[in-house]
Image: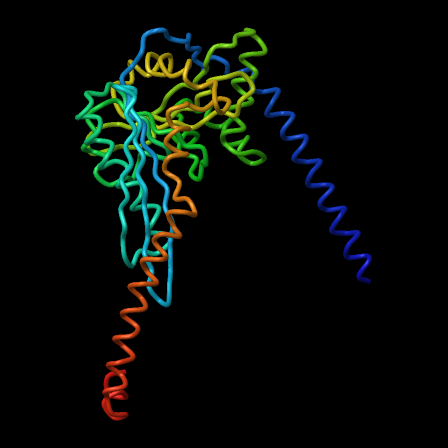
Length: 305
């Protein structure tokens, strides 16, 4: 009986995988009908003044004490400056910590962009739903490596292209669908230039539209979803300026964001120093609490609990 159940499960899985394979073949074949939705971008030689921002965070606990450490890293090619800011917080949950870190990125990014008179702001992670994003006053490209919401496919205005994307989502994730389309374009044109999918309005920040698209800086690389705030007419120029910076050190990803990603990480040495401080603080506080309880009568202790 048990063996029959296993055999049935394996047969069902095999059938489903075969169906997915057939569906994927259809998606790849149909991609050739949507090459008009691909924009080719020549690499630029004119530099752009940018500020790149990312954050790292960690929770450190000791005897019931919990401190959240957020490290904001900024890098600008204006005098090649690197800045880091540590923000300790108390009482944040794990879910809140990431949201607060993203909001702090915007806060320090806006200040840095104004201070260095930047022409472009580079963020890691989605732009939409960040607090104070409406205060950003320079063109902003937010690169999203981990796509959790399919904003791009749901924002396509052409019915045929939208239906193709929604049909493909049944068997593959949105970045892979974009990869199939962009690689189909490369197969036809033999180009090695950067490619982007046609931008669409995917949301709003304040009273301004946010545009979404996929960018493939280098051939064969998995495209990155990008949310853009600014004049849509200059998207190509900004991608053109970033292309020479997006081949190394990580294939197909802007080097400035790679740099701040490394700088923003809260390493074990820093966490160790914070823990030592917490142990000292915690030891003092626990000693005071023990002393207070020892001075209390049993009835007073029960009433205070």
